[in-house]
Image (cartoon, rainbow, N blue to C red; front, side):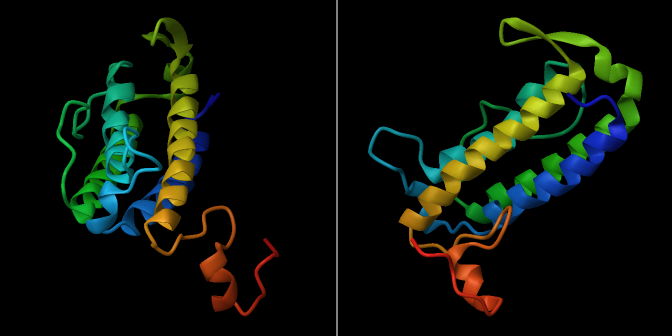
Amino acid sequence: MFTTLKSFEESWKHESALTQKILDGLTDESLSQAIVSNHRTIGRIAWHIVTSLHEMLSRTGLVFEAPHDDAPVPASASVIAESYRQASNALSEAIKQQWTDSTLAETNEMYGDIWPKGLTLTVLIRHQIHHRGQMTVLMRQAGLPVPGVYGPSLEEWSSIGMQPPEV
């Protein structure tokens, strides 16, 4: 759980950049890729990441501009990526302007439980990490190059002059 705005800002800067990297790698054609029929497509998961910023943080009283969870999924990968970029920046600025370190201990009702705001920020980041993992699998299935997140991807190993680990 975050107890200082500085620690959140540092984590958010890093993690949101990794999410942006994945979103920037999508194509319009890839948005319909699903693991199997009747499951979320990569486009739906990507848009869920975008809209969850406002959905989760609006429950804490934070006010910022971002797409709402009832907004339809765009047909354009670049629109999804740009929407995330704008929403992520707006979220970060709103926290800096509206919250203090002591705000992070304040609690809100979250999904049938009571969470401190610092925990909500932690869950927000973990939520994105979870869905990034899903998206990288779907990117691979869609034939897209997968960007490295916490290390080089298979495609990036050769670009750095190294042999990928055996599969």
